[in-house]
Length: 443
Image (cartoon, rainbow, N blue to C red; front, side, top):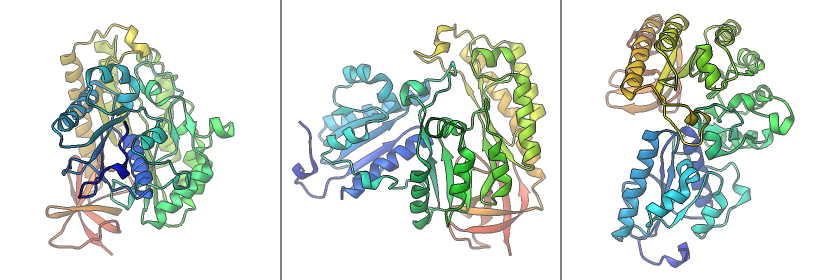
């Protein structure tokens, strides 16, 4: 029997508490869910520490790799136990883990009231006695600081990468219409958002399904025209079939950040072929060089995988040399996770876990040195900085070359200078460390 808000009589007013795990795409989905609930006058909070016996808990799960899956399972168990103790009214699970493993989870964790996948928003709202409201499309309850927002332009993925379970959980690529996205950007801007961080499983595929061509460049121009949007940042670009036109737009429009997050995963031809990446070592090198030639000063971020099946010591050393030579501005590195129902799961997971971790450590040690050297060249330079927060003794912000949570931060001593959170200031860098820049506000 479904519990409706009209059935919950006890005071204080019950709420929906949304718990978000995983990536920025999940953050976006939770924000849309909460926007729908708030639009129906439901009391909704994000990751509230206080829970009441009449509350509904919605857990938005991640199912990407082993660590993320375990965190999601632990969170489900935590709240299902609270339900068993009568401390919350309902537990609802949604997101990637639920999409991928619903039958297995439901049979093992019986205290959960309902399980939903990644595309069941209307049904999930119905479980809470709330009707989906089409007029609220684009409305969100931001969980980020209001001055920046993750901005999902498409769902799903058509890429055949051998190691990735995303298509199993998110489905095939579906672009959002440009008109809807421009309306959403306008609504965000009117509420004080200054930076849009464009996300999708693959930004560069945008438009192929709707317009018959890659149309990210046109979308960028239209978003760039939205009054109040001062920065637009691109994350999750795919290297194969990269639309060079977006580089022209970066040069044309001052509010499109010279920043690109492009996960490359590996560099040797045999690894790229087995990973089904649709690109070779030389084409990867040529692409990186072309991007840097066309957009001088662009910050390039990438991610790599260590320990993919069949990765030899030669493969690893070649990747390490390439990292040293390429000198990415930012780099993340992860151990390979052997995921069921992916193409790579048919391969033997033959690299021991300790070797995977050792290789990750080696790559990150190289990158730490590169990041330090790159940052040293920023000392004495002045950058436009968006102030994200005040933390301890510092105002903390970012340049156009830095994305939240994962990149450099700019620290300004709060006892010496004042900055408005959510505002822009010009900062002259005094000194630099591996991942932090310290500076002073200048006129």
